[in-house]
Image 1 (cartoon, rainbow, N blue to C red):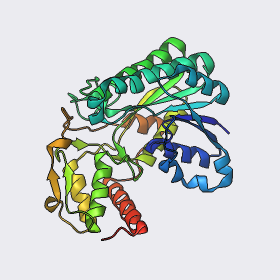
Image 2: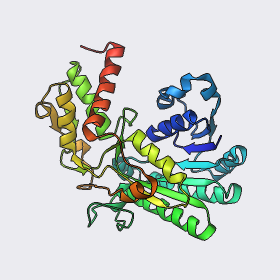
Image 3: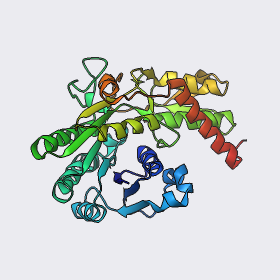
Image 4: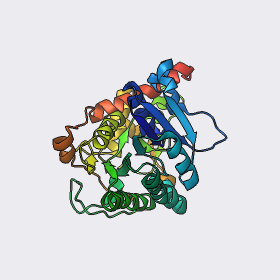
Length: 332
């Protein structure tokens, strides 16, 4: 039984990681921030929690990435074998609205956690969830682990800092610090303010007669989309490798936001062009034209490859939204 600590456990990837490790029989600990809201809907959705024995192996701890003392306290109490660092402000558009908070939580939060680990649990393995946003408007396609970093938003800049810290602490202190450079990955547990979840919810709501229009900022950006549980499987392979290193985790295929819309509306027999409205309120100050990942290193060294294709991913998300509406009796 491994002791696993997950920052960002209440997020999409954190909940899937918790589920995966609970199913493996591990003891799972999660960092959560103090909040007036007690609902943690993604964790409530974890099937493994239906099992009382699994539930007894899940423990949540109050801590904050802005408070080093709280991180040190949790590390001393838990003494984890693995730390997955997923927390931090991760929404690109919001990072323009809250750049200082993004830099502190996503960038300096990584520094505080690594430095705390170095002093308290130096033998612990550390995984950072990095992002394809670090490449910005990349001058080469597809992007791999050697592609130069060129961030064009505050979130990406903070992640570049965090990834460089992982490499510094790995080299300078010998920590088993590794990273997954994660391209976009989605699921029904995706945050509601992310475009894929917004599309899936809008399609379901239109199909059930609750609304007639879906407002989006643009349809042209292309993204390399995978299914979150597939990427979480890759995270586990990265952190359990014989040597600490960094790996791109991506599908190797990109699709535009418009193609995502088209596929989603097709599932319910509708034409997206009759319902999607371009709204300047949702346009980012600057955006990446296309991301496309080369995960050949992860495939050759770790045996990892995504299992879920684009069309299946879209169907999973739309079907989940339809099922939720139908369960609530929200059809018009």
